[in-house]
Amino acid sequence: MTTRITELLGIKYPVFQGGMAWIAESTLAAAVSNAGGVGLIAGGSAPIDYLRDQIRRCKELTDKPFGVNIMLMSPNAEDLAQLVIDEKVPVITTGAGNPGKFMEGWNNAGVKVIPVVPSVALAKRMERSGAAAVIAEGTESGGHIGENTTMCLVPQVVDAVSIPVIAAGGIADGRGIAASFMLGAEGVQIGTRFLAAEECQIHPTYKQLVVDAKDTDSIVTGRYTGHPCRNVKTKFSKRLASGEANGSITPDEFEQITLGSLRKAVQDGNLEEGSFLCGAIAGMVKKIQPAGEMIEEMFAEAEKLLNR
Ligand code: TUI
Image 1: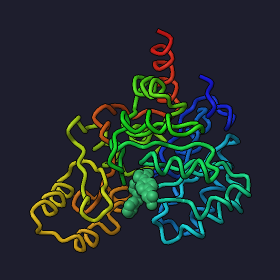
Image 2: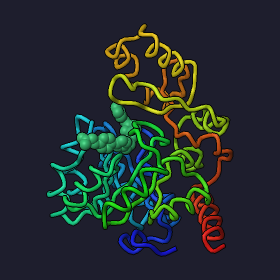
Image 3: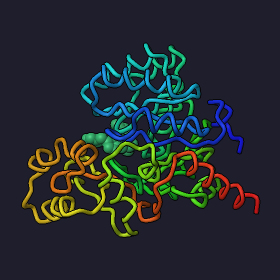
Image 4: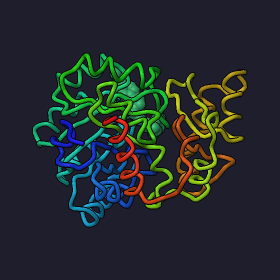
């Protein structure tokens, strides 16, 4: 399956693994890259030494291209932005903001920058700033989300820019990949399905929540803080959602309660205080299996559908 994305990066399959904060580390990233996609290590809010160590581990585990995701709301974003240059990371994706101020430095260093965009306007700005491609991410995604859906956003971004577009949000099998190609995308980004990868190092409770989830088991919380996040429905996320709806939790209290909640989910499997981020497609993820097997399966199905 050759597209401008496979050619740009010299990869076999045009699939990016989501740069999931606290989750996407070197073991998962290397597994995805070794399988022919692009594995990503999440910068998240990590300390610089942690991210440097993860990048170096990934280089030991794979000789294929991999990337780092810079979460732009991180207080460390500036330091992490320089680190990826110093460590000669070949691909950067960004999320949760406009990476405009970093673009020139990254482009001058020869890094391929692929920002996540929730709108046509930001996609156009990123093209003008020298982005190699954009990831058009629909509100079906897990974690911090925009408003538009994958089905509506992807073709509009495809029409608005000349650089390749990668579709994200609600894709977890070959049908989703084939559909993304029909919308004009030249690659996909997949997060939620990789939560169930054997190489994904999250707490077993988290993995099981994803595998057990059904179609109605994701919920968006925190819209009133300006940072809406899609999570697995748990007692905790339902309590947050009702506190938000009935005003018993103020936005400030919400921020306090959720501070550190992603770490509590990923490392401790803490159902009382953890935010188990996942996409709306979690209901379709049923099996824990190696990341490489997931990729082979999905692309075999997509190719069959696209050749029909
Ligand atoms: O970034 C994500 N997903 C994330 S980041 C995250 S960690 C976090 N922690 C605290 C608060 C918020 C997040 C968990 N999940 N996905 C990519 C993404 N980027 N989704 C939406 C956006 C986005 C939103 C606005 C990208 C650009 C943007 O630009 C606004 C502007 O300034 O133009």
